[in-house]
Amino acid sequence: MKPTNTQHSNSQQDGSPLSVDQARNWILSNLSPITDSEELDLKSALGRVIAVDVLSPIDVPAHNNSAMDGYAFNGTQLHPDQILHLNIAGEALAGHPYQQQVGLGTCIKIMTGAVMPDSCDTVVPQEFVSLTSNQIQIPANKIKQGNNCRLRGEDLRNGSCAITKGKLIGPAELGLLASLGIAKISVQRRLKVAYFSTGDEVRSLGETLEAGCIFDSNRYTVFGMLSRLGCEVIDIGVVEDQPEALEQALRCACEQADAIITSGGVSVGAADYTKQVMAKLGQINFWNIAMRPGRPLAFGEIQSNGNSAYLFGLPGNPVATMISFYFFVKQALQQLNGAIITSPILVPATSTQAIAKRPGRTEYQRGIVRRNGNGSLEVNITGAQGSGMLRSMSEANCIIVLNEDQADVVAGTLVDILLLEGLV
Image (tube, rainbow, N blue to C red; front, side, top):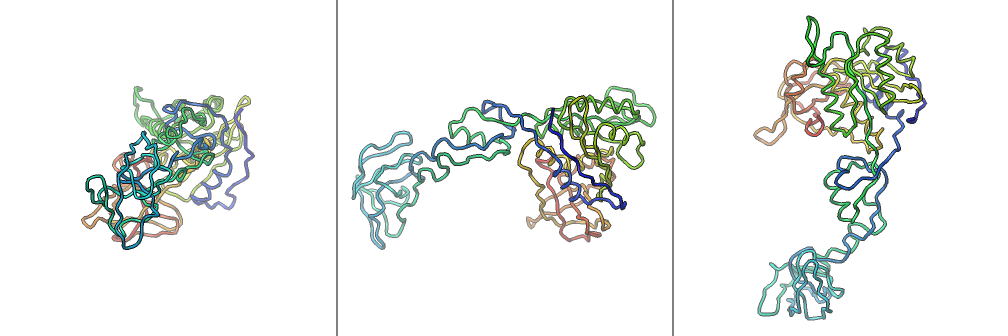
């Protein structure tokens, strides 16, 4: 059985909508991360969440070594305003240390990454020296003692934390783990997320599209977004607007998954049975959020036959579904899977056009950002911003985020944008 969580009341008794931050913070404060983990070979762990702090089993680097191709020597011989002459005693290559002492008045030729002899603490790059026969000449004041030497353990000390629990394993993390000689790593198990669409008018691909009906796009966008997060996805299909069908679908999803995502059926005009069925199975809060698109949202936890799952009820309009997912569900699923939460990073861009905006709600406009001739970022909206216009999400390369207190945007002023690359 997955961990349950005591839900706090967050009703909107005064009728005022929640702000985006209020809703997001409330969701994140009412989630209990899963704790199950598994051990994987390194190459199989890409995209997974590290389950425990990874401590370095070695010093990195393991030895003092050269940061340059050049000549290693004892830096105490350097004196201001004096040229230094050194005889070349030998050579050190990466993987082939120089085994003898390097006395005063001598140096060794050394390659990048090669072990520094114990008596050497400085490397002069080869392009800095004059070479004559078997001797080098170092110009005055060209380098200082200790230059171009990587010290043992300066990156990581044996026993220090190399990667923190909750970090997502990317290519850099794979390389770092490999550099430490770690072949297997403990990761969080994949988060299991079930999802379905609701509505008598919704048809699956391959079915006949009768008058007044629409093909289901939300299951495909939700599938894509969940897959990008590395979740194990469970497609429940399309559920009719019937109490029995909704209860059966919720129970089926609850008994297989850690979280459930529904689209449709959470708006003010939805049939009363939606709230009744969800209330029968657990504690669900239905909110109006001061945002556009995506005002209606449901969140809570349901139980069925000893299992529990968190439920995210998203609006049915395709763009509203995607916006709600990115600004509420994505962070929640990251936290639920024990991952370090990544907050959206907004960057400023100049709006090339006026944008109508009323204060009192956060708005997410689909935009196209580009660099102008001066190298500055400029953005314009994709056109009509209806929440059913999924093509606008496909055309956009950013989301223009207009905060709650903001009013109409005047052309030529700065707005915040969220780049979609890596998000969608």
